Length: 374
Image (cartoon, rainbow, N blue to C red):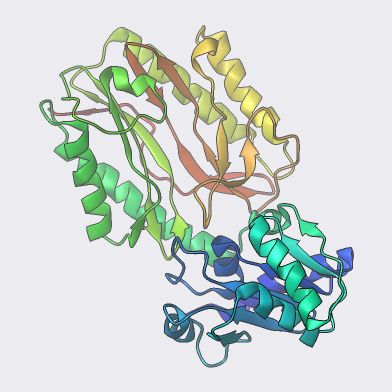
């Protein structure tokens, strides 16, 4: 059942933005934004099948027969949303809601397709309303970047399953298995122990494949002495976990231990530097400096981290381009890595919440290099 108190707070934050901008109404169609505002958990899928109109004193949601009953069950009888499944073009429906609200400035989220926007403009003319239609450029994403207590609790639960899966898979891995076999075992464990979805397609990259940060699991057979990069996460009630651990099959070489130590030092230096108000690119630079000083700067090319929530990649970011302060309440990954082509790769990733004076990881799995396959 949706947490009406939490959702009311989210709607109020949106209405505060509307008042600041002079918007009479906002049209939303992006599923993560709708999930955030309505609280309808495990309802949205890959279809763009819903349209919401938010005004200063009204909440309307249009869906179809595939989802209508689920919305009713999830939101309950006391929900503030007026939900319908009328057989009508969504753009026409939105125009009629704007007319009903006597809206003159109707902001449209820029995740809407151009075809929807054009159809909405035409429908406004058809119903006899003339309104300004400014775009919302990532404004809802910015609101979503600050998590409330309910969201944080759901991500903590997702990470508990993810940590438990790490313990399990470390006891399963051995030389002779393929990357794909390890993936199946890991994903099956999560889905059998509390996850209701996967956060994303699991990365299992062994040996030289680990040097490719987003390698896809395949038929590669794990060998004694291989490092295995495992980037994965459990999903729980639409919220995501994200974690990477690198393990070694048998005893690691001196070079593997050295590189692992550099990555760990970079990770922990970054975590110690995070607090509300830091600039994302400054935290990224901490990792760059540690890795470069160790002589591996050319082998760390991706951003240090990203926001996580209803989507696996959200705002804010720890990368060289993010020049804005990171707010308290943001949930962000820290994931430095070093990737040596033809040899191996190493990445160490936690995710957690930014506080006024620090960074609290949800991840509980060890930062030590775990040796498996004994």
